[in-house]
Image (cartoon, rainbow, N blue to C red; front, top):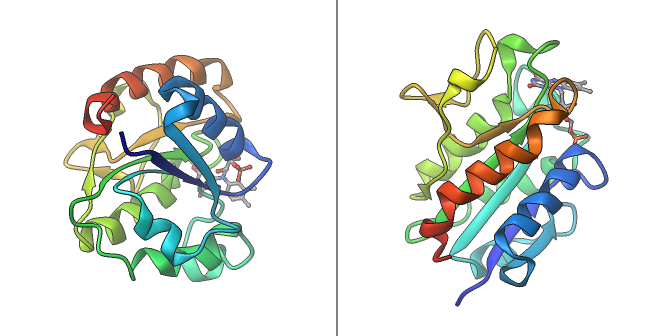
Length: 174
Ligand SMILES: Cc1cc2nc3c(=O)[nH]c(=O)nc-3n(C[C@H](O)[C@H](O)[C@H](O)COP(=O)(O)O)c2cc1C
């Protein structure tokens, strides 16, 4: 079967830690972990099954808030790839207490560009299990991917990852 490309960033923080859990839950033999810090356009084109891991570290525009992150270099690649025929899932790190009105916004920004370029996004999550005021990652009443809060709800991470992986496995041929 074809491998899943798990594109994540930044390195060595919460996203990285959760990416390792996602990989383990899928079965590590099925997953290539790719840091967006090192990734190039052709890495993205290579995979038809893709998972993105991203954190929200700013609450306004991508340009002003992402200029210093691993994602800032990689993000423009998203608009250069034709995602038709590709199956994509996203998990997003955020903080639902301090940034309650901007909870996991980056996941929504990423999804917007992916959808514009034809991606099929799987793994939507019911927001009823979360407390927050607003989020750009909500679409048609659902989170477009899996929100994870390692700052204030780390004890929920394992169960959230496990349920999410169960829900996306069929779409990834597992
Ligand atoms: C400067 C800064 C801004 C942040 N802005 C947001 C935000 O707008 N929305 C949100 O949900 N979380 C926000 N967070 C929380 C991070 O997304 C959270 O701590 C995450 O776990 C960081 O993961 P990382 O270490 O892998 O980047 C912010 C954190 C920092 C330090």
